[in-house]
Length: 337
Ligand SMILES: *[C@@H]1O[C@H](CO)[C@@H](O)[C@H](O)[C@H]1NC(C)=O
Ligand SMILES: *[C@@H]1O[C@H](CO)[C@@H](O)[C@H](O)[C@H]1NC(C)=O
Ligand SMILES: *[C@@H]1O[C@H](CO)[C@@H](O)[C@H](O)[C@H]1NC(C)=O
Image (cartoon, rainbow, N blue to C red; front, side):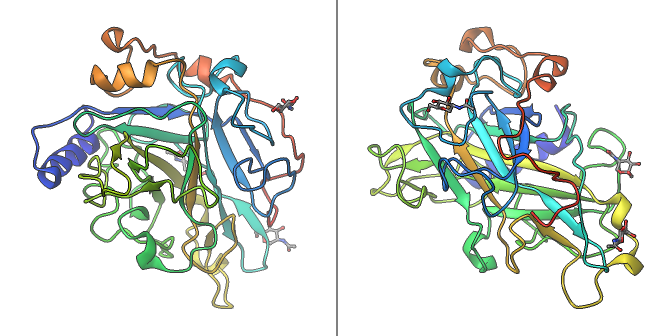
C-alpha cells in the first residue's frame, strides 16, 4: 500500500470515525484534449475553454443521456475494462512574461501509470448505491471566484520535490484538501509539482440523473475531504460512492521566476483563464451493467483485478492505447484556449 493512500485512509478513518473501508483508485490516460464539453455545451465545438478527457471512446460532443457509453464504447483509457465512464477537467497553462501560454505537462501520481489524464477514486462509506445509467454531474465551477465556496472540495497542493510518489519522498502532506492546500494554484518557485484534487458530492436526490446546473441533483454531506463524505441531508438521502479526481502537474520547467509575468497576473492558470479558483471536474457515468455496484459491495480496492466484484484491470499498454481524434481540431499546447 502506498504511503499516501495509507495516510489518506488513516485520516479518513479518523474523520469518519469508522473501522476502515476500501476504495478503488486507478489511472486513466488521456483520451483526447480539445475544446468540447458535452455536459455544459452539448453539440458545440470550440467551447470557451480546453478540457482533457479520459474514459470510454464513445465520448462525443453530444452525449445524449439516452446513449449508454457502456454499450457504445469499444475501449476505455481507464484501468478497468468495465468502466466506459467519461471524466474530464480543465488543463493547466504556464503564462510566460511575454504573454504566451504553454500547457503544463502531467505526470504519474503515487505509483499509478498513465499518459496524461487523471486518477479516479471511488470511495464508498458504508453501503453505497452506484450511479444509474445516464447519470452525470459537475464538481467545482469554471465561473467560481470564491475560494471558500470550494474549500475542502477542490484544491491544489505544492510539492517541493520532483520525486514521483513512491519511496523518494514524493508524497507531501496529509489527506487531500487539508492543511495548506489552496483553492488557487500556488505561485511559488519552490513548487516542482502541483497535485490537484477535485472531490465530488456523494449524496443524490434519488430521482434526477442530471439537473440544469449539473449540480443540484447532488449534494455534499456531513464531511469535507476524501473520506466518503459522511451522512447525507434529507433532501439528497441516497449515498453514492464518493468520486475524487487527482492530477499531477509537473512545473519543473517553469520554476525560473525571471520568466514569470511581471504585470501582477499569475504564472499558472487553469484553462478557464479566470482570475479565480475555477478548477472543476465533469463526470458521465458509464460502467457496464451492474459492475460498479458489485465492485462497491465487494469492497474492491485500488487498481487490481477483483474477482468477487467482477471487475478486471487492464495493463497500461492497453488503456494508453485508447484515444480518439479531436472533434474540435486545433493545437492545444501553446494556445490561450
Ligand atoms: C455522437 O453521438 C450521436 C448519437 O448521440 C451519433 O449520432 C454521432 O454519430 C456521434 N458522433 C461521433 C463523432 O461519434
Ligand atoms: C515568449 O517566451 C517563450 C519562452 O521564452 C518563448 O518560447 C516564446 O517564443 C516567446 N513568445 C513570443 C511571442 O515572443
Ligand atoms: C518533470 O519535468 C522535468 C523537466 O521537463 C523532467 O525532467 C522530469 O522527468 C519530469 N518529472 C516527472 C516525474 O515526470
